[in-house]
Image (cartoon, rainbow, N blue to C red; front, side, top):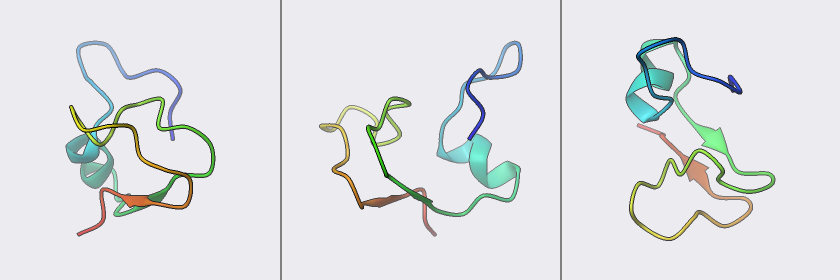
Length: 50
């Protein structure tokens, strides 16, 4: 997972899928807020899976 997004882009599920990443398991905190406006994902959750 990139720490900083490329200029003019945001790291979200669409960005990850465009780069071949189809599922991210939360092992710490959902600091990228990939769940959107929902509460942050819990440890062990899989985000951005198709």
